[in-house]
Figure: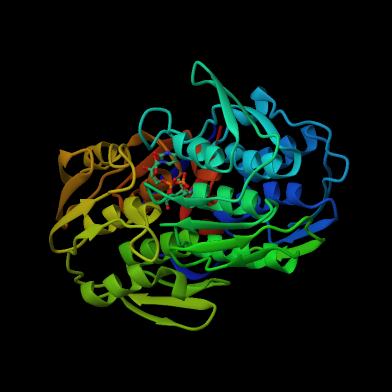
Length: 420
Ligand code: EPU
């Protein structure tokens, strides 16, 4: 399995460009099913989950032409409503194909999706199923492993989310675009990727209002036209690189980003002493000396993102004082901090949702394994800070979120190599 070998202690400097947002791209690809016209997607990140989404769409009968970071998709000849297990059970967002298939064909068959083990059990899909039922669909389930969702005729619905969920909000919004009548979704997630998806569907003829607020109203239409979608910059990459610069006290300019999407982090930077400048599409981290510790509690957007909790925890190992890190979204997203403790961090786990970090502490190079994407980038940041050499195994998990990370970090002066 490929590994990263990182020699810590190098000062980083220069510019790093942010890629298109993984969590926007992974929804736009299945959204192509909603229209029989040609869809063009630009600024796709070069990561494996995107290739897997294309494989799944191709298997359903779509035609896809890829050129660089763009793709032209036609789902006119789609001839299947069943997601192939060997493809779909490898990644969580395979479940994003179900809402569009149900809207277009009234039916979808699919296995329980795979993905990072960060939530309860094998990451539930109960809210998706509950949402599809609210549109009048029935769900046949085989041992919680395989599902058949079906409706003779979907009906518009009023649905209140008992738990705020990004992907379920997006799924039900996509389904509702083709359901006759007015659907109202309440207590929706408000992430920028949801707003971008709604704006894009509207350019294709959908009638969606309120995306980016807790209430989304969708007037169903019969068909959607062709569309062009330019994927927004990845806000989690932006935040990860900003934290990397702060943790290593390096001057780094982050380009092709939207700093307004990470205001929750920048507000904390103001409090703890990170000096930065920002423009419309760039962020320059200038210096980060004698930083203070500061507590965080993850929250749905626009609060502090759970996806930045792990890099932020590494930053807190370098700050003066004690900080409480609370991850409210997932049950298993703090387990990785045990690896950070093995590298020398002073971390006490209170319960699965809370750890206390005392800093500053020196970190030491180790042989470690990356458990998931975001813990993976956090461990890369820890390795860049550490005394000695760190070997990170299972970097497949890091590659899933950060394309060609080693090449991009070498340009900043990092001593990082990829080895088999
Ligand atoms: N949940 C359920 N049942 C469901 C769906 C979700 O209980 O049917 C729970 C989850 O286990 C979690 C909570 O609801 O405890 C909220 O999770 P949410 O559904 O919002 O997460 P998601 O939509 O599966 C997206 C991102 C995640 C990001 C979260 C929170 C995508 C593809 N994924 O996941 O990104 O952490 O929102 O912001 O958009 C990542 O990129 O590393 C990543 C995990």
